[in-house]
Length: 72
Image 1 (cartoon, helix red, strand yellow):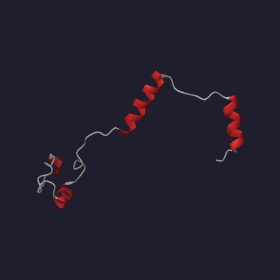
Image 2 (cartoon, one colour):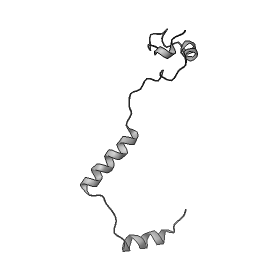
Image 3 (cartoon, helix red, strand yellow):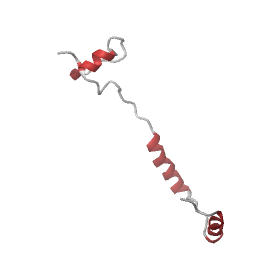
Image 4 (spheres, one colour):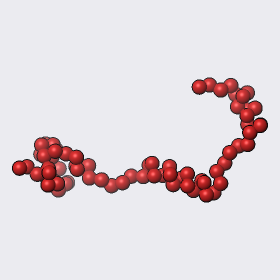
């Protein structure tokens, strides 16, 4: 969507330039931070027993297989 520059300049003169107060700014930063926050997880969790055997993280000592990932 394109907006002519003259229209934007006119709106800037008639409308107040918005800013967040300190409380709102702090809240906004926390909410945005939640989106980018990384939680530790076990990437081997979702593998089936066949995939676990194929990739071999347990053989390499990287991961301990979960009960459902052990060969029957």
